[in-house]
Image (cartoon, rainbow, N blue to C red):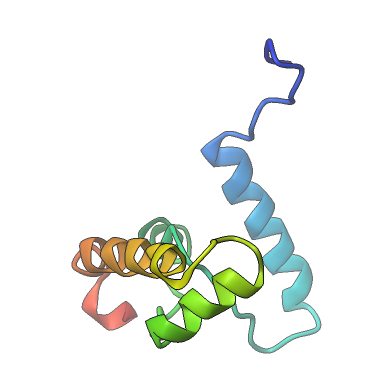
Length: 102
């Protein structure tokens, strides 16, 4: 435990093992499994090199309004920040993902 009494966050290896275990458990009953990620797509592409990566882009105005509606942002100007951050991360990660995977 850390000083603030919160449990330690899992290591990268623990998180990868957990996701792999969930995928394997689901694979018995499902032909296709979809992971929906807003962040960390480059790492996911490394962890699942056989999985195709599909980049869907939502209208940022809809994302901003959704963030306001969920109470995550006070206005659309602030609400669009998550969309901007996600798209910037995608642009940075896109070239690290093999072309045949995207």
